[in-house]
Image 1 (cartoon, rainbow, N blue to C red):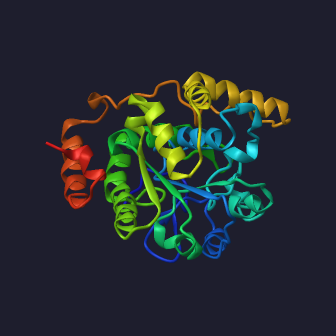
Image 2: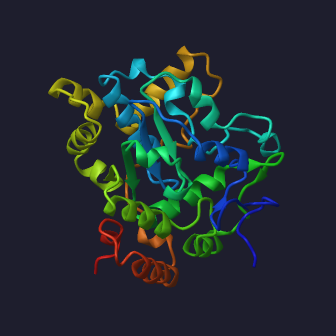
Length: 305
C-alpha cells in the first residue's frame, strides 16, 4: 500500500492499532499511562488540527483571569505524548511533554491527542475534567494537509510527497494518519461521556459563532467563576490577531527563539471550501464517516442530511 508520506517510518504502532507520528515514542506513552494528576489539572483532548491551540488559549485565560501576560511558553506545550524536536532523529534524546509538565506549576492544562484507552487510570478514578474539542472533519482534513505540507523532516525533506492531496484524503478516510481515525477518536470520547465521565464537548464551529457562550460553558465545567469583565478580556484575547500577538510577545519576553507560530495560529477561522476536495472524494468521506458516527450525539451532526 502506497503512502502519501515521505518519512521512511511514517507511523509506529504501540499498544494497539493506532498509528502514531514519529515524535511519539513508546516511552512517552508508557509515561502517560502511569501519569499522576494534581488537583486543578485539566485535560484538553482533540484529534489533530481541530483547533487545539485556540481552545487551549481560552482555557488558560479562564484559569489566569483573562490576562495573557500571565501565560508562559509552558502554558502552550505540545500534547503529553509528543516530543518537540526540529529533527526527528533526535526524538529519543529529548524529553516528551509528559516529562516536562512534571515541573510546571498548577493549574496545568494537559493537552493530548490520545484515545481514552491510552490515558492513566487516574484520569477516570479522580474524574479529571476533560474538555474535548471537536471540528468538522472536512476542515480537519484540509488543515491537517496544509500543516503537514509545511513540515520538513530528516534533513529538510518534506513530510508529504508532492501532488498528494487525493492520496492523503484516502489515508485520512482510512485512518492512516497520525493518531488514526477521526471517527474512532470522536466516537470513543462520546462513549466515555455516555458512561458518565467528566467530559465537556466543545466545537470549533460554536467558538466561531458565539465565543462568550463557549467560554462560560468551559468555566462552569471547570468550576471556575468569571465575571463579565474577565469574560470580555477572554473573548478579546482569543481572536486570531490577538493570539498571534500574545504568542509573539510571550516568546520575546521569555527569550524564546521561535516566536513564529503561524503554523499553529492561522489567519482564517473559517470553513473548508467544498471545491478544495474533488466531488467523488467528498462523497466517499461523507458516506464512510456518516456510517461510522451514526450512533453518536455530537459527531453525527456534521453529517446531517
